[in-house]
Each structure stands twice: as C-alpha cells, then as structure tokens.
Length: 160
Image (tube, rainbow, N blue to C red; front, side):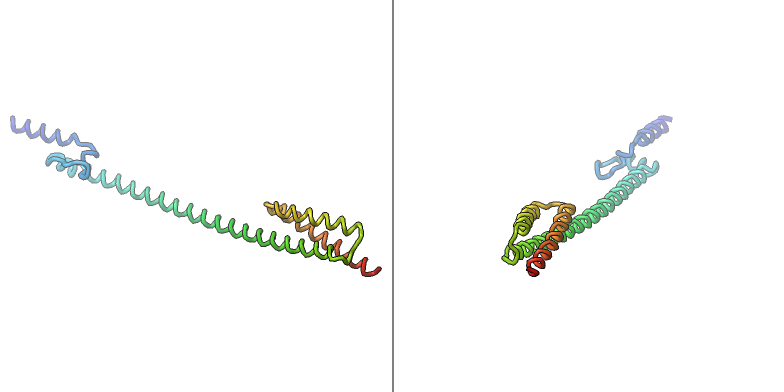
C-alpha cells in the first residue's frame, strides 16, 4: 500500500505541470515533468501556441509589407506630381519671360503696354512663390490673358 501511495503522489506531482513547465528551452525538466507533458498534451499545447504566434507574426509581416508597398506607390505618385508641377512652373516662367520680352522689345510703346509690363512682372514674382496646383493654374490663366493682350497691342501698333 505504501508503494501505491508513493507512486500516486509522484504521479500527482507530475500532473501539476503548467504549459510553461513543458517549455524545454526554458528549463531542464525532470523525468516526471517530461512524462506528464508528453501524456497530458502540454508539449502539444506549447507547440500549438508557438505555431499560432508564428502565424500571427507572418500575418502582421504581410500586412506591414502591403502597407510599405502602398506607401512607396503613394510616394512615387507624389514625386511624379511634384515633377510635373515643377515642369509646368518652369514652362510657365519661360512663357512669362518671353511675353515680357515681347512687350519690352520696343514694338509697343504706350501706357497700356507699360501697365501690362508691370502686371507681368508681378506675375513673375507670384510664380516664384507658387506652391499649389490652384495657384499655378491661376497664374497660367493670367499669363494666357496677358499673351492675348500683348498680341492685340502688337496688332494695334502694326496698324498705325
């Protein structure tokens, strides 16, 4: 009977293991702990928990990769838009400078041309500080109007 009680108490002591006790990398378990972990499914629970953690980490990693790709695409789009706007602004400044040169060339000399010169010079200053597409569009519109006025002034001067 004593042997039976001793065996039962040893076996019960082995049953008192937790999933942390079944982690072989964290400790050096005794024979009864190993036996209990093997028979009670403690090892399997620990493995399943670690596999779930790995799967969750992989999902998180995939989400992070997708977010990175989205961010990189947005950055490329923004960089392209910035390049396009800078090219538009450079073309606008060039067009403005040419229109101003035409007015200042001496072909048209009157008060109206002097006013146009001042307005074009003000537009040049505005173009240096333009930062948004709407500002750029407004300046483009004003330059187009100024070009038409310059052409009209040149034609009116040619008729004289």
